[in-house]
Structure formats: structure tokens, C-alpha cells
Length: 285
Ligand SMILES: [Mn+2]
Image (tube, rainbow, N blue to C red; front, side):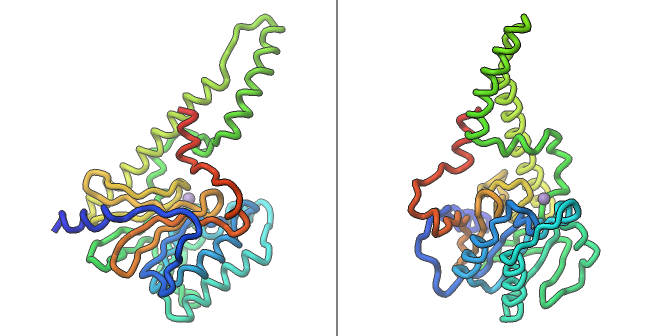
């Protein structure tokens, strides 16, 4: 049984770009970390993705609306309305829409057990794939305990790396003038990023471990904005990524095959491919 399950997702692969979108849709779509209400939210790209991937089920795996940010500064352009409308329309048209709140939309945790416009609010969910695998669906912030390091360090990209190298030069010119010894800011940051990467791994392991404890074959989460699908000690760990930076989603095809979709917006399609964050992180380590 276990072997069958394994063979099934071993065939799963990540796809990039504007490849053929399934005309008949997919069985399930998992998205999280949309952060509606923030300037960083890539609402239009998400709208395009949702249009291209109709589904029988849609799981909103937390941090859909950024309540934290909205409390500080109201940012709600039309495209964010459109996303909400699109989700409600999807529920109305017969798609099962489940909303599992995250930490940024924890206000919705007060509405667990209720549904709004056909969208069910659940503290956590269980999705059964076409092949019978049971996937635990949770945002993942409850595992923050394993990530004690500043989370922003996990987002450091190569642009910032370039910047720190530059800053490093200026800093050390200044230090030299003040008669202070050379100190490498970039080495310091490199070390910090390495630590941050360890925390990512710790997070993934903690989530997978809990899924296994609970008797599930896999888990779908978000929260750390890092799309991933791999086996961790016999449990399928899936992270559906985010719609702020990476534009990623997890989909289940009608045959039960799981896939991480890396959405490429039309406007960017002609531009040279930007390396995935995982690649740029390697520059730093
Ligand atoms: Mn979160």
C-alpha cells in the first residue's frame, strides 16, 4: 500500500511557465499566502492562474487576507476585490472552497465551522486524493516554534546579496578610517542565511513529523513562502508557496498526481527566466 502511494507521487513533478493548462481543470487546487491587503500581493497573476485552473476543490491554506497589514495601512485595490469575487463565484459554481486561516488572517479563526458565501472555514482540513492518500491541510504557523531565527533572512535574494557586498565595502572603508579592523558584513549575513535555511528545513521536518504522527500520508501547508514537494521520512511534504514572490500553487490532477505549478505572468513570459529563489539562495550558502 505504502509503495503504491510512493510510486504515485514519485511521478509528480514541478512545471514552469505557460505550458498547457488543463482544459478540463484539475481535481484540487491549494493556494496560500496571498496576502490580500498588501502592496506585495500579486492579485492579477493569481486571477489569471485561477482562470487557467478550474477545480473541483479549492483549498485556501491561510494568509489569504493580511489582517496585520490592513490594520496598519489600508491597501485594497480593485484587483484584490476581484480575487475575493472570483473565490466566491467559484464556490457558487459548485467548487468546494475550504478556507484554513493562517496567522495573518487569524481573525477568521473565530469563524471556524461557519461558511461564508459557500466558503467553509476550517481550522485544518483533510484532503483525500484520487488515489486515496490522505493529506493534512494546515497553514503551518503553529510550527513557528522551530523557526526562532528572523524569518526575513530566509527571503534574502541575490539582489540583496549584491547590495550587502557593496554596503560591506563602504562599511569597511569607514571602519578603516576609524581605525577599526575589517569585519565582513556579507560573511555575517551568509552565516545568518545558512541558519535561516536550517530553520526552513526544521520547519519542514516538524510539519511532516506531525502529519505522520497523525497518521496521514502527506501534508499541505504554506506559511514559509517556499514551494516544495518531497518525501520526508515517508511522508509527502507539500508546500504550496505564495502569491507575493514565487507565484506558486499545488494542484492535484484528476488521476491523483500532485504538481507544483510555478505561474509565469504573461507580461513576464517573454523576459529571460529569473532563477528560482532556491537557486539564488545557493549563491549565498
Ligand atoms: Mn503565515
